[in-house]
Every structure is written in structure tokens, then in C-alpha cells.
Length: 414
Image (cartoon, rainbow, N blue to C red; front, top):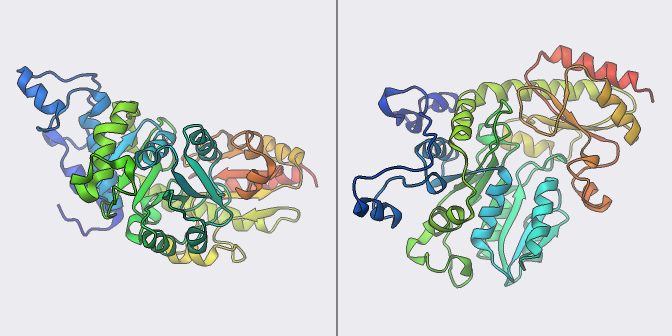
């Protein structure tokens, strides 16, 4: 199969799709717990990773492998591992390179659940240093001999800050540490972090990759280019013989396997089906979000945050990285929490739900839900205020969405 085709064609005709068995045009679902063998010797070789094969779905399943192959191909990685959720993917990736006494440098504008996770890691002795602004200067200033990884979101949710991956990765690599990037809000349709210098890319597949809001999942893609120094990244000791593949091998045969954070086969199937339409969905979502943001920006008393608005601080980065597209998330400030609630409650087509990346437009008040555990300073660093409304734009007719939001805002009063 051709590998130099465009993104939308690769989604449907890439190598990973061509590898479906029995001439199937969709991946088979292996909804089983275990796989039988003709001899104990054969099963022993599979368990010892001396022969390819599947023994138990927690440590491998053909449906998961098929989905992993597709994501890996789209991201241009050396291998991918699917997980039970996006949070499982982040925790597995970080724990694979960190142990007690180690440090993580992270951006301050992270998703609330990720911030909660990083605080949980403190109890295991893994400390996170939050950079007010994650850039090359912050990496140079904050790195110590205990720093093992830099972690950030390519486009933060919901503050919509855009990382300069090339500069950050260069600074991190000069210090001998890798850059892990959560690219959930971007998807490989808008940009591919590995090609920009990131070492690992992580997705919550529950969002745009799945698109239909029908399954939870996550995926880790290793670029396979970082030169691991085991004397520095001691969490990888025992895997030095694998060189640049040390992280991927440890995840596959040790941490991911032992933590039991595997994706369910049916979820891998549903996410693979959703992946088929990623390009066309993202094209419509980005177009709708752009038009909705510009329409709302003209309403008095509403402060809109979206990457394609000319006055957005990351507008130039969006033009560079995403070809002028702004993704599917926008936020606006309504003035007060009460008015934000009123606007949300008056919407007809936007569903009040805590997901993003659905084909339906979803809306939520982040401060009282996703960020409720965090103090006001941490929330505001993530772009979340008491009057913030987050909108995950769907594929509805945009004229209906614009009319709906205008009516809700006007109905909520000043």
C-alpha cells in the first residue's frame, strides 16, 4: 500500500488497514479473555516474548494491535500501546520513566484530571514542577539532576495555549530529558508532535479519535528516537539492551502489562471505526468552531477565546502548526457564574456533558466540574474562571449553533 498518500486516504487505505485479516474491510473484534495453544511449550515461548502471539487480553489482543497500528502509522511512531483511558495512558507513560525521588516539569495549563494525577504521584515520591509558561526558558531554568521528563499539552484544554514543541524539545534534549506531549485536542489530523521534536505523544481516544462518544480509551505512541541513558532514567534499568526502544518495551512487557490498563477489545473496535471519519469530522468541526467563535466575539459582554481570532496570543502559532485551523474547543466568559449557568441552561442544541470531541456540540462549566478540586489560582492558570463556559463544537449546521448561542446569551441578560 502507498505510504505517501494524503491523510484522509491513509485513514482508509494505510498499511495498518490493509493488514486486516480474511479480506475484511473492518477490523475483527476478538472479544475473548484468553487464547489457546496446542502445546505448553508454545505458550511458554509467547509468555517469554520469544515468539509472537497472544495469550491473555490484558497483555495483548489482535483487535488492540490493529488499532495501535493505525494510530502509530498516522503519528509516524515506532510503536503504540492502547490503554483503558487517556488518564491511564498518561499515568503509564510517566510511571515508565519516573520513580520515587524523580521530578517532572509540566505546564500549568493542564486538564484538571491530569493535574489531579500529578498531585497523586507526589504520594509516590514523584514531584512535579509546574511552569507558569512551558517554554524553552522554563525548561532551562527548572531542570535539575532529578528531572526525568517534560510534559505538556500541545493545545491546552481549555486555556488554548499552544506549545512551541520544536523549541521545548531542543531545550529538553540538551538537558538529556525527553518531551512527552498530550495531543488529544489536536489529533494527528491537525499536527503530528513527533515530527516536530516530541519523543512521545499521548491521546485520550475517547475524544476526537473515537468521535461518537461511545467508548473510553487512550493511546501512547513512542517516536523511538530518544537516546535513553539508563544511568539517568533508572526506571528503565534492565531494558538498556533495547536502546531507543527501551521505553516501548518496558511499557509493553512490564508496566502496562502489570498495571492492567489495557483497552477493551470492543472499545478498540469502536475507536477504530471512529478513526475512519476523523479527517472529515475535524474539517467540519474546525470550520464550525471558527464561525461560531467569530460570531460570538461580536456580542457585547462576551469574551471569546479561540485560536483563529486575530487577537488570540497563540494565533500565529496556530497558523504555523495547524495551517490556520483552531481545533474544536472554544471558551467564553459570561461575566458571572450565574450568567454562565443561565446561558448553558438555555441552549437547545448544545448538550450539557463532560466530554469533548463528540460529533455533537457539548458545553460545560469547567470550574464547578472538571476543576472543582483545584484552588482558584491553579484553575486560572488553566484558563478556568468562575464565569468560563467551555464549548466542544460538533458537526451540526453552524447557522443553527450560532442562532442557538446568540439566543441563549441574550436570554441570560447582562
